[in-house]
Image (cartoon, rainbow, N blue to C red; front, side, top):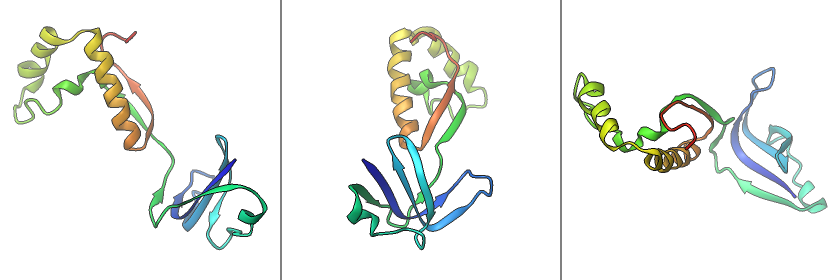
Length: 133
């Protein structure tokens, strides 16, 4: 089945770096079939084949973002000592030594991955302890 998102600003990564506003993106399975301005969209296509339509309601459709530096296992320590000039040595390293284990890294990483997905991140490079987790 094909799916189309209509009525949003489409930011592309094509050679011209086109932005279609308002625009649409039509895809099938995991492949984009066509993207363009709403002027190019053929609503009669809906009568010819089964297409799921999602109204973008004026939003922005962008390619997935890439986070190239993460420490997903550190989620439990987020915000601790933000007002401390030497928070790494005062808060984070001692807490890691005391509390960090494979299970906490695993659970924290799952939580961090879910947060990133909600924020539009589709790829991440993580560096932290317990790599196998």
